[in-house]
Length: 472
Image (cartoon, rainbow, N blue to C red; front, side, top):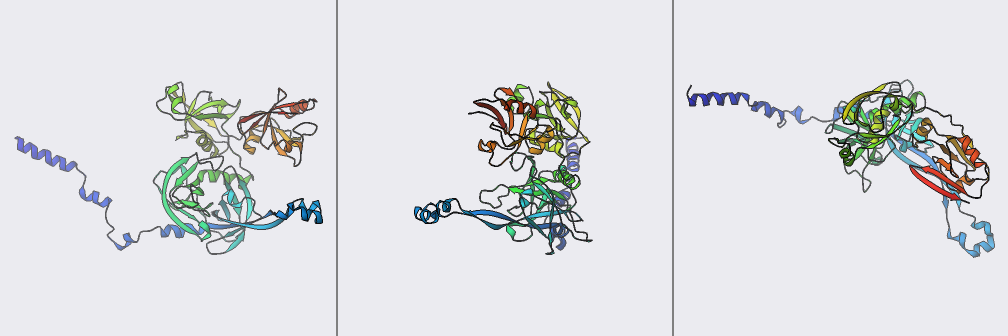
């Protein structure tokens, strides 16, 4: 074969290997038919919108009316000093609005906790303009979720099925449905801008879907749905400098919603799983110190004895990188992955230990109520008189939202007008030391407080900050 013939054969082979130009044009082309031009989200909206409701709440608040006349000596002379004792309280009705999603055909509705917080009356309006009085089945401030129930009689209401939020990917198309600014039900479209946003600071279990679908005040509690018409999130908050949408909205993932729904509709409270260990984000400096290829995972710094992590063989210094195949790069992500699992199940973990990869299985369980709380209201001549205290256990710490690894005596309530209130102690404070004596139980605290002293030296832990006080 001469050179020219060989060149021709080579050119034919190259042309055969090139992609079909017609096939490439089929991927991107101008709509060619009337049906293609009319493509829209309308069928999806007709299917999903009836399951999204408007929520109106009313609560009575007391306000005090102040007047400069209270300080006028002329009026004091004629009406007496009692005239200046203080303003009179007036009661007024405060209205607010939000959105909700019907998740069961019997009228079970999911919304945000902040939508119904403190409400004396909750009313739900369907898309067909029917109104129902709603009953609050339960609320979970830590996830900013609440469950309502209306009574539609024998009628089966339209509802949205859940979709696994772990299947979402950045770039997926989504629709947000709600009642922004009270103008009525509104639909906006966008994409998933980011997943696993954990530094938002909206609730204790930060883990959000970020979307650029327009979300505004009044959208709270509304639906974020995928293009198959299923619920993937509850719209919860926006980032804004002026109160309006700037394309940064946050939704609570459906997996968390399902977990809270199951707890509040069965046992009346959320049984939150726990990990039994604490850790910190692996920073570039930590990664360099540990000879890691890149900063990733959670560096375990503390383990609760006999807890799930301890029984799974996790040690201080381990780096947890994955839970059930999902990366965890900060403590909030780890807590979310554990919190969305069912009590009694187990999760698979990947752990780095001294540069080597290990696999482990962790059992999902509720935090134990050990030791027993021994709840007691303190009395006597000491700074804590009027405070109700209890032995701190992992279960009580989870209930109160305090450090689940902490040990000691926690303040549960403060009686109004008491000595403890005067010294500004707060529910959630953990009493660690009194006059140099370590306090681990209520009984020990009562023993120490029974000793008469001229000066009290106290160590109290408040939100991870140790306060040392000296009181005469």
